[in-house]
Image (cartoon, rainbow, N blue to C red; front, top):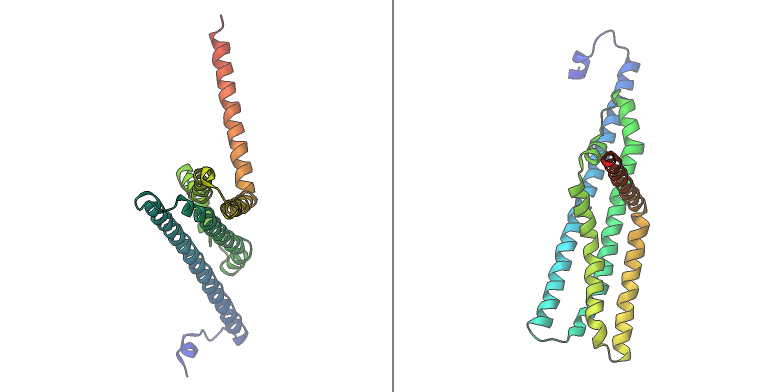
Length: 220
């Protein structure tokens, strides 16, 4: 006789115990899958921050060679290519994180609510989205702009120094990489950009209405 046999109520039929065991297994699988997805998201986020640090380090080294060691300024033509590769990689990791959030919200959470009978489970993503302020959004936006802005600055600086077909080919290649990065950025952030534009419009309309009210109140 096992401990489960002793702890089981005598009135509980085996069918109920089998259903409870299946429910427990289902809950354990949900929790394990949720933890695995959250760990993957944390790993991708840490890798993205590490990539930003590595990119800034490489750019600083190139600038050090050009400024301090009097190296050929056309070395800066490597920056747009590195910026595009790094930026697109981070955008792909961000898309993976958003897909994981959608999977948790649309697939795992309904199953967890069904198993637990409580609709407050797996609400971290919604809670975090509500608690984020404008500063965190500005930080994320600025972090994504590091790559295209640095690449465009290097292209602008090296434009007067181009003198051969190879130089122009490298410059145009860098420009093409940056165009691909900006296109990917616009496609992925289309919804965010629309909300930003609508927010700016609402703010502008609010300011205009306040000015009109003040102007109307000032009239005799």
